[in-house]
Length: 436
Image (cartoon, helix red, strand yellow):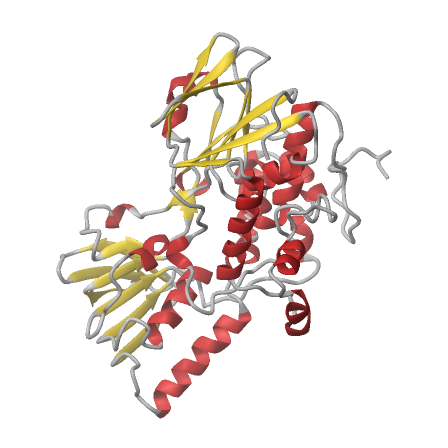
């Protein structure tokens, strides 16, 4: 909720979990007020992928606030309590929560905060004297502290860029499009959680009885999410500190090895797919007439359009074949870009190139951008430094910790303890030896 007259007036761009967390943690702090600008007319969270039966891959206790402030009024447990579902949720088990419910939680938090301005698309952020001037489609704002939290953009392979968008599109827009595909030949590209959920959705007839369904992934198989206790310590605050201190070469190699910890497939989803494939052998029902899963296979080119002739290459053998398809869905993930609205100050920022075509604003340990401007003007970046801060940067696990770190930096005192958590693994150099 807005606090007039508070010492630090912060303008945050983007009403995703990152900035909602910042606003929720700022709510009880008297000397800071956070105002969020959001270009959409309503709060939504991956609306194109809220498929029936899609579940979170992180604990709901890794919400907007709980790891930083378990007593917060904006926690997921407070949401369940207010919705009168807490007892039922406890009986059901809250280890896993549907993505639709988590989006409803985010909307609930946004409404309680009442400091999100919807329909405000930021056009440009400029430096005017000792402050930032933020121009939107409606008005101008003046602020000395800006927090950018607009998230990542869909990664679209070069070979797919000139195809008709109603026939070839990124998975992030799936539910926002016409989805009656009866008798169509559909190819899903990408072997992570989104690709698996879409393949299952199409396999079980949710979009009609397909003529053919193919799933293509460059991975050696359809791999499960790495979710062991030791792997999950990659999502601890102290690991972030260790990762930040490493060379670019070490960070790149490390992220490659960690892929399945952030983009493996839920075992329950794998089991559901395998069961459906088995059921298809027993009874045809509304299953596609043809089903094929191609692993260790790269999609490389389109040789024709309407229908597509998708050229693929088996990586181990080099053998090239093609799939004929009417629809291609790209579950190819996301990359980080420098938002276009920062172009007026881009020459004052340091930029680093990252794997997968990403470009990141260079930030420090407090997520403050390296900015060649007045010391009084501070720019922070949330959810845009995976190559610098590690695997958890684009994951929900450390959202409250990161927001608390940013908040502490803005107000110049420790409102929230952002020190290392207890852990079984030691990451040398991540924290001072004298730290508890």
